[in-house]
Image 1 (cartoon, one colour):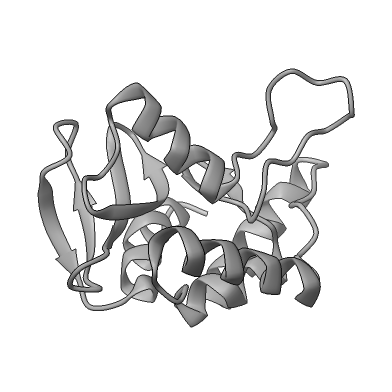
Image 2: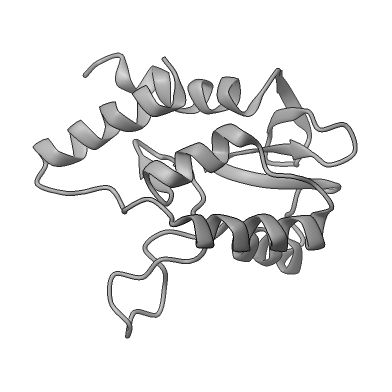
Length: 154
């Protein structure tokens, strides 16, 4: 499955439960995020991640989640976001001393982090000690690994 097919399948699951995925990002929001990530991390974001953000601004499903472009709250008074923003999540991990050293985390699942090594541009699944345990050829392959198995029973 492709990233858009996975998002569409999860959207269908949400709708059968009477819920909705977050709307996709505007091009202005995408441009803002690209600028911040380039300034803070010195990398361009993967095209597949940006394409996913255009479809839905982050989501969680079956214990796995992919970060949004920014924190998203259900209502203005909420203390915690319904979906974490990628920049804020990574800065929070750094403050807590649990970040991917030299990396950018795109999402989580079970006790794993899923992210990119900034030096090599390679994508990995990281264990609880932030050691890489599985390498992926692309963001799309990592995304499929995170969500496709969770769709097999649907």
